[in-house]
Image 1 (cartoon, one colour):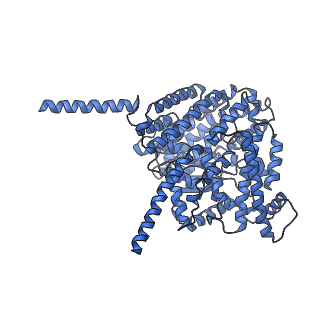
Image 2: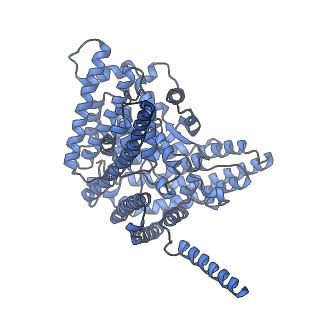
Length: 609
């Protein structure tokens, strides 16, 4: 008997050890475990992502909060090798043995990894060097938005990360040096970067953004006493003065030198293999295969369609038909209702009030505790209208919508509602919240986004804002249409600039003519399309994909609002999906609502009997 028990124990131990070995070093027995291992492996190589997600902290792991991402060329190559192995291992699982949820995640990850691996042939183009997601801007943003301090250990982790900034800046400088002149952005981008670095390098260190953030977080950390706070602030000041500032000064010097040797021309067409690279980015962003020629015709047609809808609204508001062109009428309306002329001093405060009202009116008041709308960091204020920073996966940290009060003052006030609709509810933030809180999605899927899925949804809710009862008057509807015009014309500009059929100046003139918006807004959008190529056309592809789901999202029977929210839950419970796979989402919606409708019919028949 004892011998049999020993055998059972030995077999059990061997099984457990074998399971653990396969989970960590080899192929996990379950694809679900493989998905989670991918998330952990990717996170361990990207500690900033782990801080953003705030998952490991729930299991007592905090050391990743001491590190910054390694962006050296050698480490990038290692990461690529590991990703290739993960891709091969993913394909080693037999599709016939997966359930429908596993199969969808398999197909999505297969598509995602294949695109990333294919792009490695353009690795020299992939190094970010711009005013939107350059290292000089993203390091302070990450620290301020994600790095938390609740006790002494957290504060020490923050300081440890600060001490790594110099090394990361040097890695960035080395990466820049390997890029050829043709692979670098146009001159104006270097001007922007230098201006942003100057904004960061304030003379008084105690007024520096990072110092102020650290100080504010220390004051809220009740577990840290006053003496410890004073000592920590002293250490931070030394670290910033001795390491961070010198590194940023060196980066600034490098940008000033590079500026003298780059072209003023904008567009990927200048890159080595630029045409092929742009088409690669376009297929990754759109998640469908289409020709650039067809895409351009489609975008121009969308601009014309929107102009027709705008003309109807403006003529209704003015109570008379005018001979002015649509653009002239838009210019008149934009000037008439300009935010800075309406007495709104801080548009971010106005947006918060609008947002709370929108939540209450639509029965989603619980979302008030999931996002903050606040002014963006100073060095973004001239260049980004808004920027979304997602919440942590465990909801420990709220999401942030960071807006430029400076740029918003140049928008007509009636467009503010459209910004909230597209970026928060029922737009991007609402979508992200549903994905983050999905219990059926593996963590790795919660981190993956597709431009067409995210940008297309913003465009879709703007298009249907009136039918969803999100706007309260024609002016707010006009505001939604002007946002759509901004996005559709940006799609045209994206395609034309990167195929060398538009210069930057021609792009700005085109968008001014199409949208009727002030030049400050247009320059910010055009410059974003230059440094983030292939993203803008995703608005239209994603919009078309969501239109396939109109029968469910815009169902006119029963409670329209409940049906819409239920459909959103079903769609986003599957996570971000490439446009080419939307047929799977449609099948799921059809299945759920057919069953629900059959049940209602059966209950009615039962009552009648």
